[in-house]
Length: 363
Image (cartoon, rainbow, N blue to C red; front, side, top):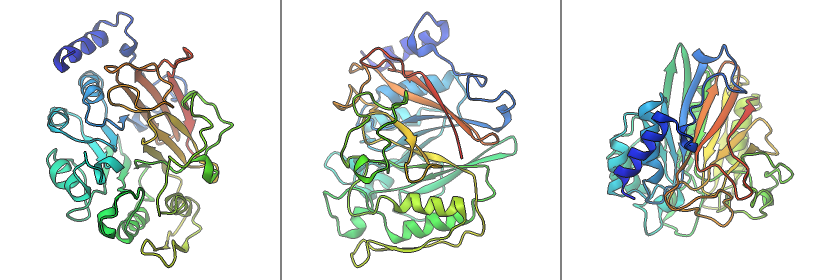
């Protein structure tokens, strides 16, 4: 099926609403969203792991041409090509993008430095970068006097450590210092979301709640016992512990990976506790996992299933053909501190359950 024909059919489904599973239009008064929260609510689209495919990107663009969204996040393993660049540039809604491991150093990706120069700069991503050849950034969105700060992290700065292929998560001291400094200036914004590629909550590290079987966790992988969520030389607790210090006001003075070339000195000087962290958004697993971290119960992470052609993983429980897309519509109410996620596209699981919507309080 051509992209043009696919887009036309998708648009017709939304317009005429003839039973197509994609015609759902989340409204502000569904369960979990307070009726008085419209002026403090931010809506965005979450996709990840497109792996060179425009099947979901095209569907998202069509959706945003009809439904108002503040921005679109694409959380890594884009594997950008000419079609992806053209599709993103054709959108009237901002795309906010962070690299995945495939983008950073594997053969099909442009590499750590090329991701910025040959992709992010090409699409003119509207964010504030701290420097050239840097893939991490932030962007503030304002609505009705409320501000949502979006922070995009680069977990794959491997070229900065001597081009060490095979390593996954690795961040420079420069990026950690930048993040801490940015958080020091973030207590007055109404909400903060952080974009990552790999999540922090694998069961080997004790962060996956394997007894939790909420609707937005893969039925095939809810107790998957490996370190695929996050591995490499970086301490997987470093970022959550920084956010915990920011949220609690209990400052950190700690050395991670002491004595190695990956050593990080983390010293925070947060003047007070801040309650505006809303959650992490990522992918990498190729299956859905949306839950709080065990050791950090105030930290919600939302990892979305593969958004390219096909299922992308034996642990993805969605009934999904090569041409099916999937994306999440996320509503964050920064006043009442609530998040609602509504699935679009492929949402029926192999057991015929529907991954339709879910809400979480934000602590």
